[in-house]
Image (tube, rainbow, N blue to C red; front, side):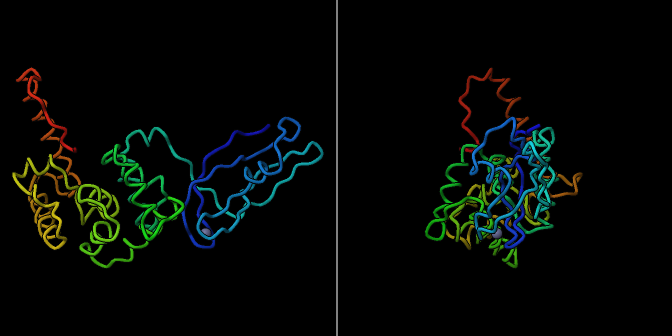
Length: 265
Ligand SMILES: [Zn+2]
């Protein structure tokens, strides 16, 4: 039998970059007439950063013999789509843990954070990543260097500075990324939470020192809210849920006749 192409997450054994690729676990030469280039790409992977080439361990049935090359790499567990459906659960159960362990993320996990915060922002974020440092050619490499800069920073202030001053992110997205990476230190900066807290809409300031002071005060206000929920992450969810529910109740009372602006726009 020939197995269909499968996506995989590869960790480069040389430079430790995590990246997404695809392979065929098995190929039957009598059923499939792939050319040599295809066979090579289906059974190997090349690191986009350091060009190290790995054998993936494809089982090849040539008709005369079974060929098996020991993989030079350990396959990661594949994505559980039912788990991924709950993207927030995936981010805080899987991605947070992976970052805490590896101090690195694949472009897939990184962009899952971006999509969770604001799906429409993903192509802008991709352009920003590729443009950084005079132009990166690959999003896996760009995400890896961003993660290295964030994990290399010593303090929360410095981590936020990497995203905002060095890479050009704005506070809502930067805070969402850092909330997944450091859920005890950061919370998502969001207009819904601002509404519930009654302030802080000026936190996304042009001057970084002002931004940091306002955002730090915002985090303190979130920490002081919803005392029945001890975890910072749950306080943020409480505020968002309360704002969203209150807005829907108000909209129903007004029969949806009032224009409600897009809270994230
Ligand atoms: Zn590499």
